[in-house]
Length: 389
Ligand SMILES: Cc1ncc(COP(=O)(O)O)c(C=O)c1O
Image 1 (cartoon, rainbow, N blue to C red):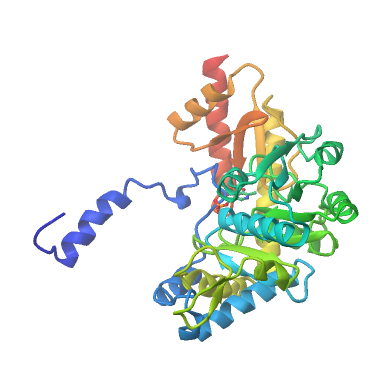
Image 2 (cartoon, rainbow, N blue to C red):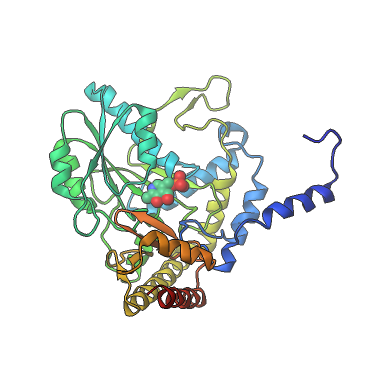
């Protein structure tokens, strides 16, 4: 550490050297991220609320109201009139809270001490963290031919220790939507907690369906659904970190409550103690700024780009892992190994990711990717093909 203080100019100059090494969403080269450039207004609001602490909400009553309003507004497009929950750091923390609530309820109501959770093989790795932290056994259900959870496999894996079933609305690798209606029926008939991880799809599926898409529903209109994760910092254009956990009933929050004696609120259900208010305020701002029509247009534009790229890839002899349901595409070339293709794309400046099941190049068509970027990407693929084959 420096002994003498540096002045502001020196610090900022030094910092910009680091920042210059970061990629910029505007270049359209980040093709494998579920995050994107946040809305400028949301960024401004974020900075304004950097000193508000929702861990001590009696001191920041205005920000607390903003959090409650965001929860209510997100509930309104997920078919729940009175949701309970919090704005948290992202999908990982939201999923952890859901699994903690499910574990505690099963312990308190059914005396289950060696809980198991059934997640699809496609589930985000945050469930591995949750099972490790919470001492729950993770049971992976198989996928069907469309990479959605196989209902038979869920049924086969249920036993007296099953404390939760998880379905995904927008899988991390391929953007597929699990059959939540069927999972809800299973959850009700077996009296098991059902959590839906809509970290990615939560801010797009409802809006796409508003404008005529016919995507499977995943929300609280199914009575078996107890909680839903939605990430404003993915398709919601909010700055990182902004995740959201919604519960159908207050009892799930109560099941996690601990005393917080020295604070203005005498109890807490969240995992984090000191909790930044900026994500709640900036999510509130971006949701007001976008409105339903803004999110409909945004999701639709991402889907139009997805369809364009999917069609173009097929014309160039690439094979899709499956027909995209949301704005994620997995693809391969029959003659080029996936990892080699990813490396060659990276050498040309394209930051793609690869999915593990099935192994494929994975492109997430977020708001920062435009048609012109895609035509450049396709040109690079053509060059790679010509050189390789
Ligand atoms: C479906 C799903 N759930 C949860 C997460 C975890 O979200 P975060 O990285 O915000 O913690 C992700 C992240 O990509 C995801 O795709």
